[in-house]
Image 1 (cartoon, one colour):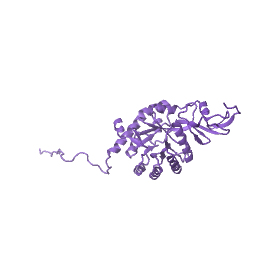
Image 2: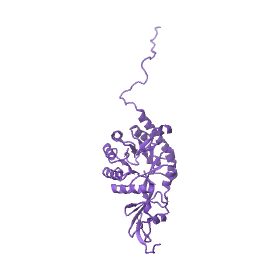
Image 3: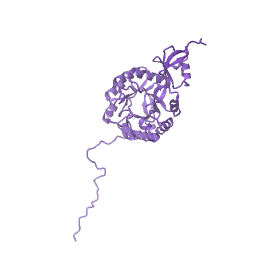
Amino acid sequence: MRPSKDPVPIVLNGEERLVAAGTSLEELVAALGLGRRGVAVALDGEVIPRSSWEHCTVRAGARVEIVSAAAGG
Amino acid sequence: MEHASSADPLVVAGRAFSSRLWLGTGGMASLAALGAALEASGTELATVAVRRVDPSGRGALFELLTEHQVSVLPNTAGCFTASEAVLTAKLAREAFETDWVKLEVIGDDRSLLPDAVELLAAAEQLAADGFVVLPYTTDDPVLARRLEQVGCAAVMPLGSPIGSGLGLRNPHNLSLLVETVEVPVILDAGVGTASDAAMAMELGCDGVLVASAINRAQDPATMARAIALGVAAGRAARLAGRITPRYYARASSPTEGRPDLLVPPRDA
């Protein structure tokens, strides 16, 4: 397990949040109550493949976008 | 209708569709209404937008489409630059495990008309990256040809602005466009009712994408069926080879063999 550290600020879907240092994208997605299908994540403007979510952790100031399907033409 | 259409599939990027009607999910009143419209339309492909997750409706739309065995066509709606559209397409590819993208790069937020310059740039980048690019474009035949040249799998010209229901405002341009490109032409945007969809097919479009006209109709499922019938009717009419319009009448009954019914008055 990682040693606990002070929470770090990130911007998740446009809202500032504090998350534990070393939080992975996998954990962020799970915390929103989402399954893995139909969801994509961008970290600082770059798409992160699902297979990398587990090992990709967020730094202070990270901009994370988590998206899924919405009604649209 | 089913028999006729299955023998005459729409083929885009090697994939055959028995229905030439694609649906947009935008404007749906509820998931239940959309589900009924999907069923009534017989469609096999429906568009979705890529948006920040809505904690209240987690994944429900994606699941609904999967349940109905309708493939997802992600769009890049809301993008105003090529770079935003490219990133959105990449997010969609990751989320929905599809290389297909309905590429929208909008140039004006009132008319929602495409930005030709940004659209072409995005199309070129995405096609080079292996996407099946289906660009929402104007009815300009020259731009359509440029989009085809950079590798788009189809072109999707508008009939009139998105959601306007104004029908096909420049049928002549659409005819020219159909003649100009070899990739399939899917009429996108502007359909208001079934006759608009039929007209698009009569002009030689290979398919029609409809969202607002169905989802915002008073009875979406019935309108979905009507538009599906319009698409099928228009396709059949196109294949049948219509008569050339004439300025004056041309009798459809023979003049030969007419009985002489004018009896001269008899003398008293």
